[in-house]
Length: 211
Ligand SMILES: O=C(CO)[C@H](O)[C@H](O)COP(=O)(O)O
Image (tube, rainbow, N blue to C red):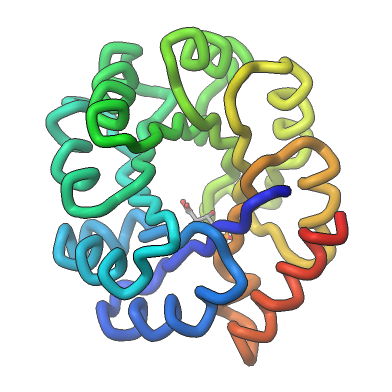
């Protein structure tokens, strides 16, 4: 069964906690988005884990250097998954993988901006990555890009890792992502931008479970 990850991309601490409360019944992973974690820091990781001990917390650090050093406190604060850029040095990725393993967590390699995504995915999987993230970022989405072809390329490699997909996923595309082999589907704007985020998350849950 594929997991749904809700991207909490607001900067506001209280709004983030409130949105998590609304969507939690329908999602598996609560993601603290990159701008949100930079703005709010470890305090938000602790608060979110305390409020939702049954959910995985992904901290979208998008680490680029000093992997183990940067990721460790976020795992210790209650994060279950942190992200590291596939554009970083393999030593950085290995540092985050080491921090994850030391804390019973998972390291996700984010392929955002990576030219040869298949090569990085293979290398990261060989080095113990837990999740490979196929990701079209917000700025690339605004330029008309989508993650769907890259998703097929990465799942087609048959690597022994979970594949996550993010980048403008909504109710019209979520089932095809699951059918293409995504173990985790990430949704941000399609939930937080909906008139009722809870209703949107509920609808997406039903679609994923039926896929
Ligand atoms: O990581 C992100 C941006 O870098 C977003 O959280 C991710 O893309 C999901 O949001 P959306 O569904 O709105 O694209």
